[in-house]
Amino acid sequence: MDRMACVDVPALPLQILLRRHSDWGSLPVATVDRDKPLGIIQCVNERARRMRILPGMRYATGLSLSRDLRAGVVADTEIAEYVGRLTRWLWRFSPRIEPSSREPGVFWVDASGLCPLYASLQEWALEVRDNLRQAGFEAVVGIGFSRFGSYAAARSSTGIIVFRDTDHEHKYLRAVPIDRLGFDPDLRDKLFKLGIRTLGGFVDLPAAGIRKRFGPEAHALHEMARGSGWAPLEPEPYRAPVTRTMLLEYPETNIDRLIANLEPRLQSILTTLASKSAALASLRIALSLDDGSAHYEKLSPAAPTLDLDQLLTLIRLRLETLVLSAGVTELEIKGVGSPAAQRQLELFREKPRRTLEAVKRAFAKIRAELGNDAVVRAHLHDGHLPEARFGWEPLDELTLPEPTEVTHRPLVRRLYSPPIQLPPRARHEPDGWLIARFADGPVVEVIGPHIVSGGWWTRDTSRAYHYVRTRSGRWLWIYNDRKRRRWFLHGEVE
View 1 (spheres, one colour):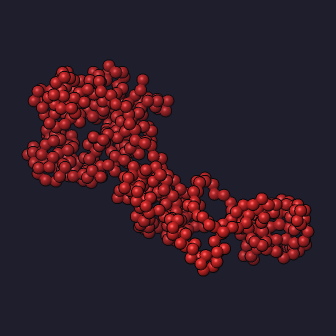
View 2 (view 1 turned 90 degrees about the vertical axis):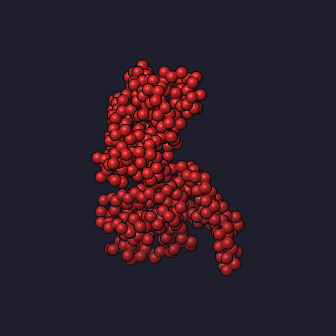
């Protein structure tokens, strides 16, 4: 049988407020819609609840019950940001998470099929609660057989509840106080006047009169509590982080060059997120240093964005404050996305980093100054010799590149045209074979030969190609022309 879990971060706006004011922990605290005496109380902590300060009251009414009451406003944008963070956190424990659209901090989680990974659902729930506690949030977990059952269990307890069977769930629900659930304050107060304080009393009311007397929302809640109303899980689409890495040729200490290396990879991440209708919510940067250590940074824009310049400004401000023990040898950036507004996606498409019109105008200027053959592209041909396998042709039409992501950077063989003739090789070389710059040192490794011969239809050719490595680490591609008895440098591997 499918199991449904509800993870409740009780009074999430209140927990956000207490993160700002840690000295309020021992006082009655509430969140209000506006910081004025007539502001409506939205969330309260346990100390305020024991003083009968409840959501829906005026702030002034709460102060009349306790002069020690503290209150503050938490913006909707800040709450939405924390809901997104908690959703990504819960993805570690289940791929199917649905945040509540009515009550921030309530998350329904598909708990089916977790027992092969955990000894029991109780152990899984403890793992979820402990991990959220390490992140700075108190949470309650209820695991049942229905959406409303798991929700009521999480909202009415302070620990972890796992129902054994459906009978256990139904019996528990009847005793749940209605002021612990997300009842509308007006409906809650009307039920109190009728002497109904538990969910069992509410369920026992005749269904026919609920809609007429209390309205459609109360009727829908009544149907769910009775088990008549049912809605499938609508999980938030899982958004895996987008990662880009780069190995640097030498330890880098210059901030400008580091940002120049980060910029195209950050642009690639934004393009990937935009293709998934997402914007970047947070960015993690990992710097591997030349001394074997590593440094990690995390940045978050004010709101999820696709603005490259804004993100580069944040990166520069952070990197300029760092004091690293050695140069950077490897970069890794990981972008975490969140749903983007349609307007953001439209602006991102309207302002691409590369436009065909700008490139065409630049090429037209080059042709006007240097001639029509100044802008060309490589075209592959069928040929026997390496230099005959490609040619150059004028570039008439230009399209945007569509690169594919690779896990390992390929080696590039750069050809010299024409090949560079090397000096004759001496029979005895006491200092080794010097075929490049003196600073590169002699050849220390040779791979080959690889024979290329033929061409009898034009000119008979016989070449013995070798890859040679100099002491400095350069890999050169050379060949011996057996007909001309000469060595030539044909290219270099990078």
